[in-house]
Length: 124
Image (cartoon, rainbow, N blue to C red; front, side):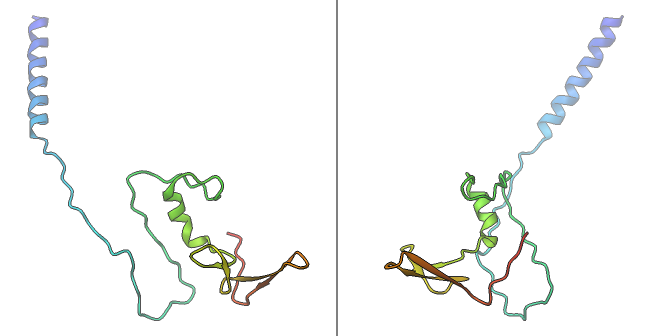
């Protein structure tokens, strides 16, 4: 008698499980594309906070030290806050126009760095 009830319950559970599995539809997703760049022609807001989302299928490591960074996603996340002190051209040569300009005196083996007035310090 106990075996018969057990087999009946097992048959019901199996049937329900099969019905559930057979009714599951595969998930489909539509590709969404966003523009790479957005230009806002409105006047800038004062004392505003810019919040940016980064869509990814896996987390980024979050190591923001260039020497220890090993994944491209963290580099992408850090890029807006990684302003270079010096300006440079496509060949990697220093040019005027960064937060700091450098002039080399090869005769005296010195370099003079001038920081522009528009440069601001932020400690985090």
